Image (cartoon, rainbow, N blue to C red):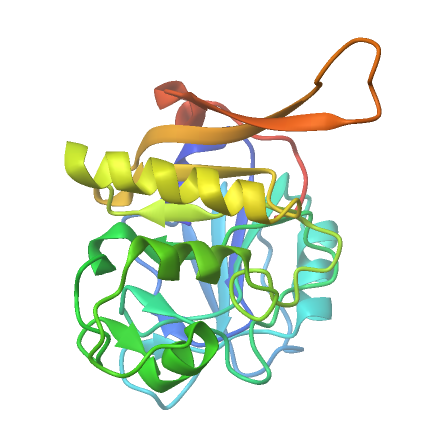
Length: 255
């Protein structure tokens, strides 16, 4: 969220529909803490990056707002873009949504599911996964099995995994922590396979967010097989390095 906020040139609203860590003062111009979703707001138009959350008794955490309240703040506050955290993994590298998760706002134009490439070849357990038993059930694994490339492909393309509750939004998964060439090669192949398996995914970003860096973007290009057979198409996945993408302001739409 912070990398996106830095990249955007306009006014940015940050919020969540779930609990999350406290917002960082060095990344946000104004942090507003509300007693509940519908408490009054101070004047916000003098600040570029604004984070709005509710108070919670959970240590070092803030609470979320209802989706309709976030939408109202976004529209009435004159913001150019809104980034909403809709699910949390408690700082783990992989998770699958719970029964009532993720809490994706109906007005979201883009959904960004996130998983870490660092889970590959590691055992499925509490050290790296949030609710590992749910992951095991969804992906047909046993606890302490090693996570493979196929597991991540399944997770990214699964309607009850990364594609749950996405509505009509554009889906752009992020495979994070692609921090070396070996992981880049594997993440690229995972992205290709997931794109081939699900047409709901428009492209997949391979990133290293510790450095706010996009490593590659894997996209789908659909073209006719032959000019005389345009109704039959072949899916070609083109891999291109898109380092500047993170620094280019996105469209002024809510995310």
